[in-house]
Amino acid sequence: MTIRYIDDMQLTGKRVFIRVDFNVPLEGRRITDDTRIREALPTIQKALELGGKVILASHLGRPKGPEPKLSLEPAASRLSELLGGKHEVILADDCVGDGVRKLVKDQKEGQVLMLENLRFHKEEEANDEAFARELASFADVYINDAFGTAHRAHASTAGMVPYVKEKGAGLLMRKELEYLGGAMKNPAKPFVAILGGSKVSDKIKVIESLLPKVDALLVGGAMAYTFLKAQGLEVGKSRVEEDKLPMAQRLMEAAQRLKTSLVLPIDHICSTELGDKGPLREVPDRAIPADLIGLDIGPKTRAMYAEHIRDAKTVIWNGPMGMFEVPRYAAGTRSVAEAMVANKNAVTIVGGGDSAAAVNDMGLGSKLSHVSTGGGASLEFLEGRELPGVKALETK
Image 1 (cartoon, rainbow, N blue to C red):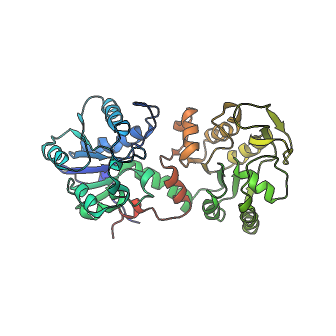
Image 2: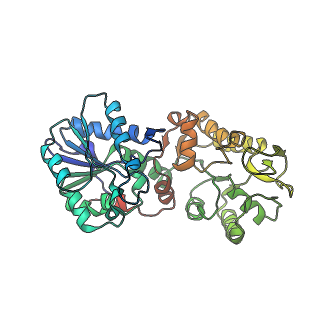
Image 3: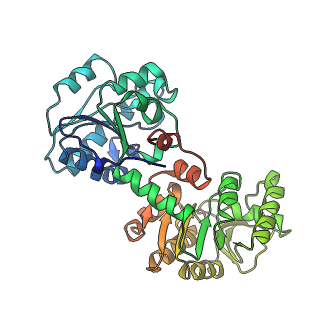
């Protein structure tokens, strides 16, 4: 795979279209987590430093046509602050059309032009050719720095690329591909993967992809109860995907054949109901009583998982260990994050999504080797699938 990167390109005087991922969480007009904007800064600053005229494009949310509440105005405002007022950030009122064309034509060096939410037009997700061509007409150079959308073949991530003279990837995209690619192709051993979340069905392909590569696969979250039930254990009222029990059994048999340790919880934190109501119960055994719901891994499991993590040279984690959004069920997720931070000799990677949100909320993200900005994209990458947004950047 040969991809050019922005720091190896000549950009002086060229219009540089950068696909960023500013799909940030909002409360009203307030951004509650600006991680994705801050992660894109090095690429934006590099393009400006190299004399490019920067045009930014992103989606935000899932609008059904133009929706003022999903305008990129808060992102433009925050970007202006992060650039320290050194560069004027202009927000267009659309992402295509004559108004945008005029702004592109009149853009001065040092200005940053941000297009309005791409998904205000259904043609973006439909990868409409005419829409893609119009986006491409604004640019001399196309740069994709939005790993979080690289698994989607949309107009701005794939469709427009053939119609721009030069193409390449940004610095964040390079970081994502180097860390995730390194873990999948040439990891330092021992290699430990940690998977959590609610459904085995969401992670089947990831487990199949990882089992031949890892030394140990640690399982947490509600998906662990499907595996435990497949072993014949009682799991009370815990969430189980009954139709996936045969698959869970096959995955455990595959791990055995490959001599890979597939490690399941040996104790649990439970309650009689979901959320923060109901009595908190610590169950010291693998089986869970009939009236209880498993909601986090227990202290013995936390210690056992921390031991696996401590001895690893590569650790990759995707998915919380329990219902971490409820504080009393966050200990398992926190213990995994802290064990990864404590291992200074390992490459430590968090594969986006809820686990990335958790480590950032805990203030631990900056202490890990890499926290991916792509939830779905990182999962598909770990599955070994080709990402359209990355494929489009490849040169022959």
